[in-house]
Length: 261
Image (cartoon, rainbow, N blue to C red; front, side, top):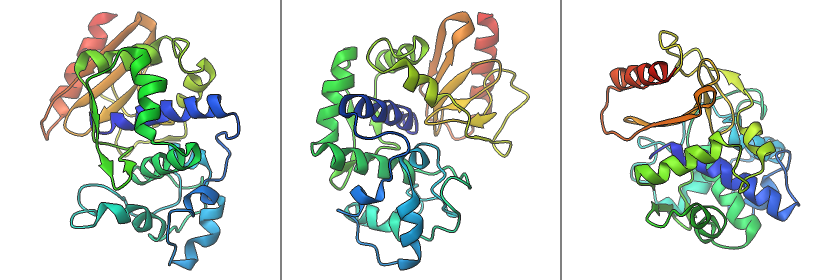
């Protein structure tokens, strides 16, 4: 489901926060990350000390370069991805500059596993997947850590369970307050918006979720993975696909949501 993995990772963060009670969205992440990262770019030191968990969730660490996507990691040893990220220039104050990439959610995966001091996939299975009845899935690792931002495989009927969890305020598994937090707008995203679609459009980014029109919010993955929640008609619309030009597919999702009304 590609970048819908970010939505699942954001839910896991909420579960860890609720269960452990010793971190929240304003927790600095560098004290944990520095245990496993080798920082050579000393110009980043001050920035990294000010990066909080919320900046990982909403893509505002402060990078100017898109990181950990298929292009920039080609040929790089996955065991060095943490070092690759923390040594890439941070040129903006954390929280002040939005740039969508996979870097923040991979660091979130690293942070959660190191904070828990247990394998994050085992935790995810116990705290989320098994409780939703999701048993046949796969989440790829980059080195010792879940890819976090991507590389999660789910069957459509199991992806629907994630959508229903979001639709119904966490279903008692994830705190309703955390689900609401994930829907809070971080930044408008006109550069990727499709305002011709009244419902299924990237109006803004929140925390692991995109905000569309008329109350719709969704996770979205490259090549046509969709997990759209439509609260006012009590519905979830999902797609799995493999196509480069997703314009028509997104129009069809929008038309489907309109038909539900």
